[in-house]
Amino acid sequence: MVKMMTFNSFAEFYPYYLSEHQNTVCRRLHFVGTTVVIALILAAFFTRQWWFLALTPIAGYSFAWVGHFAFENNRPATFKHPWYSFLGDWKMFFDMLTRKIEW
Image 1 (cartoon, rainbow, N blue to C red):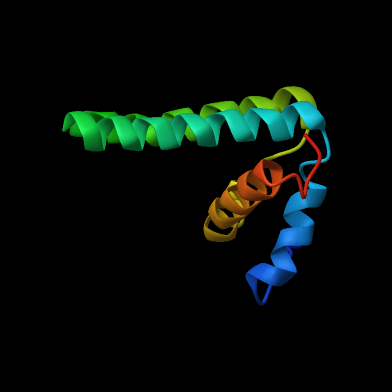
Image 2 (tube, helix red, strand yellow):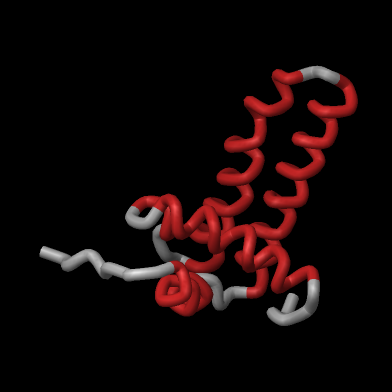
């Protein structure tokens, strides 16, 4: 039986999160997925077409999961740490945007 890792804070979790995203293509797919999520939220707001919001989980997770299963060859952290993983995706997005993490 595999023991699930536990984290006391997001600060403890984030280095683990990054270790699960070492493949450049995987990170780029996460970035694209998050960008599409932002675009869908903005489109919903500006057009008042709220159904766009229903597409955000599909857009976000589909790009990320392709990155994990096809390139990183691991299971997404979302399955065991959904909240920290959600936060980690946004932090990694901003870290990539500000060039703190390599593209």
